[in-house]
Image 1 (cartoon, rainbow, N blue to C red):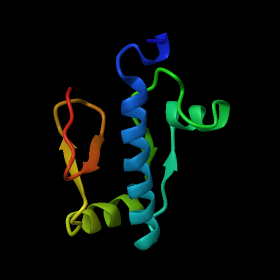
Image 2 (cartoon, one colour):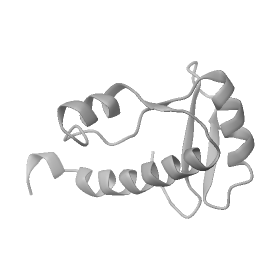
Image 3 (cartoon, helix red, strand yellow):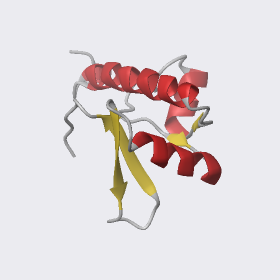
Image 4 (cartoon, rainbow, N blue to C red):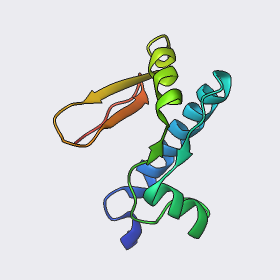
Length: 103
């Protein structure tokens, strides 16, 4: 096993790509603007994909689009959002309803 996939990172990235495509389609359907951020943006530019060891997606949405995103995602059959209130940062998780995840 190569170092970049020591912890199943490639499988995680494949699943994240499916989620990102689903999220992008959802946002296009409802005209919601978003951007990749942090490691996801760096990976897209520097690696034409993911940073080899990255195992999450970083997406930012401005306030107006975020409010619409929350409203529309509540009606979605495919995506769901988990409000993260435990930490001091305002970070929410979006995932496919049929998926599972580990902390």
